[in-house]
Amino acid sequence: MSHRHIIAILRGITPDEAVPVCTALVRAGITLIEVPLNSPDAVDSIGRAAKALADRAEIGAGTVLTPEDVRAVAAAGGTFIVSPDTNPEVIGETVRLGLKSYPGVFSPTDAFTAIRAGATGLKFFPAEVLGAKGIKAMKAVLPPTLPLYAVGGANPDNFHEFFTAGCAGFGLGTYIFRPGMTAADVGERAALAVAAYDKGISK
Image (cartoon, rainbow, N blue to C red; front, side, top):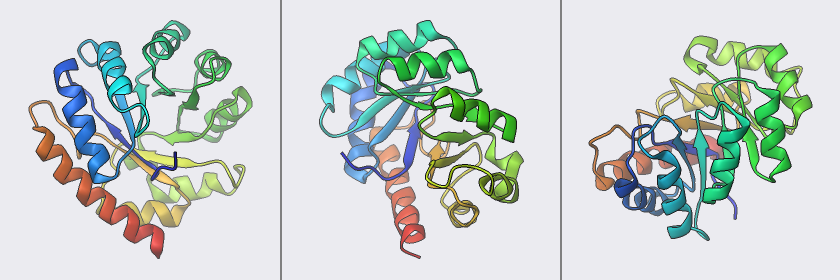
Protein backbone atom coordinates (compact mmCIF):
# COMPACT_ATOMS: atom_id res chain seq x y z
CA MET A 1 0.00 0.00 0.00
CA SER A 2 1.66 3.24 -1.11
CA HIS A 3 0.73 6.43 0.67
CA ARG A 4 1.07 10.15 0.38
CA HIS A 5 3.16 11.28 3.33
CA ILE A 6 0.22 13.07 4.96
CA ILE A 7 -0.90 11.94 8.41
CA ALA A 8 -4.38 13.11 9.39
CA ILE A 9 -4.49 13.66 13.16
CA LEU A 10 -8.01 13.18 14.55
CA ARG A 11 -7.64 14.53 18.08
CA GLY A 12 -10.96 14.38 19.94
CA ILE A 13 -12.74 12.04 17.53
CA THR A 14 -15.25 9.58 19.03
CA PRO A 15 -15.70 5.91 18.08
CA ASP A 16 -19.01 6.61 16.34
CA GLU A 17 -17.38 9.27 14.15
CA ALA A 18 -14.24 7.29 13.39
CA VAL A 19 -15.35 5.18 10.43
CA PRO A 20 -17.25 7.91 8.50
CA VAL A 21 -14.47 10.46 9.00
CA CYS A 22 -11.71 7.99 8.09
CA THR A 23 -13.66 6.91 5.01
CA ALA A 24 -13.93 10.55 3.90
CA LEU A 25 -10.17 10.97 4.34
CA VAL A 26 -9.42 7.88 2.25
CA ARG A 27 -11.75 9.07 -0.52
CA ALA A 28 -9.85 12.38 -0.58
CA GLY A 29 -6.53 10.56 -0.87
CA ILE A 30 -5.19 10.49 2.70
CA THR A 31 -4.47 6.95 3.87
CA LEU A 32 -2.35 7.51 7.00
CA ILE A 33 -4.70 8.30 9.87
CA GLU A 34 -3.74 8.90 13.50
CA VAL A 35 -6.11 8.81 16.47
CA PRO A 36 -4.39 10.44 19.48
CA LEU A 37 -4.80 8.40 22.65
CA ASN A 38 -6.09 11.44 24.54
CA SER A 39 -9.26 11.26 22.41
CA PRO A 40 -12.42 9.64 23.88
CA ASP A 41 -12.14 5.81 23.77
CA ALA A 42 -9.28 6.17 21.30
CA VAL A 43 -8.39 2.47 21.14
CA ASP A 44 -12.01 1.65 20.26
CA SER A 45 -11.89 4.21 17.42
CA ILE A 46 -8.62 2.73 16.14
CA GLY A 47 -10.09 -0.77 16.22
CA ARG A 48 -13.22 0.22 14.34
CA ALA A 49 -11.37 2.20 11.68
CA ALA A 50 -8.67 -0.46 11.23
CA LYS A 51 -11.32 -3.12 10.68
CA ALA A 52 -13.45 -1.03 8.31
CA LEU A 53 -10.54 0.22 6.19
CA ALA A 54 -8.14 -2.71 6.51
CA ASP A 55 -6.99 -2.81 2.90
CA ARG A 56 -7.41 0.91 2.15
CA ALA A 57 -5.63 2.81 4.94
CA GLU A 58 -3.18 2.53 7.81
CA ILE A 59 -4.67 3.50 11.16
CA GLY A 60 -2.34 4.40 13.99
CA ALA A 61 -2.21 6.09 17.36
CA GLY A 62 -0.78 9.40 18.47
CA THR A 63 0.20 10.81 21.86
CA VAL A 64 1.59 7.37 22.74
CA LEU A 65 3.60 7.66 25.95
CA THR A 66 4.16 4.13 27.28
CA PRO A 67 4.98 0.60 26.04
CA GLU A 68 1.59 -0.48 27.47
CA ASP A 69 -0.12 1.99 25.11
CA VAL A 70 1.80 0.50 22.18
CA ARG A 71 0.57 -2.99 23.06
CA ALA A 72 -3.04 -1.81 23.32
CA VAL A 73 -2.85 -0.15 19.89
CA ALA A 74 -1.28 -3.22 18.30
CA ALA A 75 -3.99 -5.44 19.79
CA ALA A 76 -6.67 -3.15 18.30
CA GLY A 77 -5.18 -3.45 14.81
CA GLY A 78 -3.21 -0.20 14.65
CA THR A 79 -0.14 -0.23 12.40
CA PHE A 80 1.87 2.81 13.46
CA ILE A 81 2.76 4.75 16.60
CA VAL A 82 3.29 8.52 16.87
CA SER A 83 4.60 10.17 20.05
CA PRO A 84 5.11 13.78 21.11
CA ASP A 85 8.53 12.85 22.52
CA THR A 86 11.57 10.64 21.94
CA ASN A 87 11.14 7.66 24.27
CA PRO A 88 13.42 4.70 23.42
CA GLU A 89 11.18 2.31 25.41
CA VAL A 90 8.13 3.25 23.32
CA ILE A 91 10.11 3.09 20.06
CA GLY A 92 11.62 -0.26 21.04
CA GLU A 93 8.25 -1.81 21.87
CA THR A 94 6.78 -0.45 18.63
CA VAL A 95 9.57 -2.03 16.57
CA ARG A 96 9.34 -5.31 18.54
CA LEU A 97 5.64 -5.60 17.66
CA GLY A 98 6.26 -4.86 13.98
CA LEU A 99 4.59 -1.44 13.96
CA LYS A 100 6.01 1.71 12.38
CA SER A 101 7.46 4.30 14.76
CA TYR A 102 7.25 8.08 14.31
CA PRO A 103 8.56 9.71 17.49
CA GLY A 104 8.48 13.45 18.09
CA VAL A 105 11.89 15.14 17.94
CA PHE A 106 13.03 18.73 18.41
CA SER A 107 16.82 18.54 18.52
CA PRO A 108 19.71 16.57 16.97
CA THR A 109 20.01 14.68 20.26
CA ASP A 110 16.35 13.63 20.06
CA ALA A 111 16.73 12.70 16.40
CA PHE A 112 19.72 10.42 16.88
CA THR A 113 18.25 8.87 20.03
CA ALA A 114 15.16 8.00 17.97
CA ILE A 115 17.21 6.64 15.04
CA ARG A 116 19.30 4.41 17.31
CA ALA A 117 16.11 3.04 18.90
CA GLY A 118 14.76 2.05 15.47
CA ALA A 119 12.41 4.87 14.40
CA THR A 120 10.76 4.51 10.97
CA GLY A 121 10.60 8.28 10.48
CA LEU A 122 10.91 11.45 12.56
CA LYS A 123 8.15 13.86 13.52
CA PHE A 124 9.54 17.38 13.91
CA PHE A 125 7.28 18.86 16.58
CA PRO A 126 6.28 21.61 16.99
CA ALA A 127 7.35 22.49 13.45
CA GLU A 128 6.09 26.06 13.73
CA VAL A 129 8.65 26.71 16.48
CA LEU A 130 11.54 24.88 14.78
CA GLY A 131 10.67 26.39 11.42
CA ALA A 132 11.82 25.21 8.02
CA LYS A 133 15.32 26.63 8.68
CA GLY A 134 15.75 24.56 11.83
CA ILE A 135 14.60 21.38 10.09
CA LYS A 136 16.88 22.05 7.10
CA ALA A 137 19.89 22.50 9.38
CA MET A 138 19.20 19.17 11.11
CA LYS A 139 18.45 17.35 7.86
CA ALA A 140 22.07 17.96 6.82
CA VAL A 141 23.32 15.55 9.48
CA LEU A 142 20.51 12.96 9.37
CA PRO A 143 20.40 9.77 7.26
CA PRO A 144 19.25 10.98 3.81
CA THR A 145 16.64 8.24 3.31
CA LEU A 146 14.88 8.72 6.66
CA PRO A 147 11.48 10.39 6.13
CA LEU A 148 10.90 13.60 8.08
CA TYR A 149 7.45 14.94 8.93
CA ALA A 150 6.57 18.51 9.93
CA VAL A 151 3.85 18.48 12.58
CA GLY A 152 2.38 21.40 14.54
CA GLY A 153 1.81 24.39 12.33
CA ALA A 154 2.09 22.66 8.94
CA ASN A 155 -0.74 23.44 6.52
CA PRO A 156 -1.19 23.68 2.72
CA ASP A 157 -0.05 27.33 2.76
CA ASN A 158 3.43 26.40 3.99
CA PHE A 159 3.94 22.88 2.60
CA HIS A 160 6.42 24.28 0.05
CA GLU A 161 8.66 25.71 2.80
CA PHE A 162 8.89 22.35 4.56
CA PHE A 163 9.36 20.43 1.30
CA THR A 164 12.27 22.76 0.49
CA ALA A 165 13.74 22.07 3.95
CA GLY A 166 13.77 18.35 3.19
CA CYS A 167 10.54 17.08 4.74
CA ALA A 168 8.83 14.10 3.10
CA GLY A 169 5.45 14.92 4.56
CA PHE A 170 3.22 16.39 7.21
CA GLY A 171 0.93 15.68 10.12
CA LEU A 172 -2.24 17.75 9.93
CA GLY A 173 -4.27 18.24 13.10
CA THR A 174 -6.70 21.11 13.64
CA TYR A 175 -6.42 22.07 9.98
CA ILE A 176 -8.10 18.81 8.97
CA PHE A 177 -10.22 17.87 11.99
CA ARG A 178 -11.77 19.53 15.00
CA PRO A 179 -14.45 17.94 17.19
CA GLY A 180 -17.84 18.77 15.75
CA MET A 181 -16.79 18.75 12.10
CA THR A 182 -18.77 16.48 9.80
CA ALA A 183 -17.18 13.80 7.66
CA ALA A 184 -17.96 15.98 4.61
CA ASP A 185 -16.11 18.95 6.21
CA VAL A 186 -13.10 16.75 6.86
CA GLY A 187 -13.20 15.40 3.31
CA GLU A 188 -13.15 18.94 1.87
CA ARG A 189 -10.16 19.94 4.02
CA ALA A 190 -8.39 16.71 3.09
CA ALA A 191 -8.90 17.34 -0.64
CA LEU A 192 -7.28 20.79 -0.31
CA ALA A 193 -4.33 19.29 1.55
CA VAL A 194 -3.88 16.53 -1.05
CA ALA A 195 -3.93 19.07 -3.90
CA ALA A 196 -1.27 21.21 -2.19
CA TYR A 197 0.86 18.14 -1.40
CA ASP A 198 0.68 16.80 -4.95
CA LYS A 199 1.58 20.23 -6.33
CA GLY A 200 4.59 20.42 -4.01
CA ILE A 201 5.77 16.91 -4.88
CA SER A 202 5.59 17.61 -8.63
CA LYS A 203 7.79 20.73 -8.41
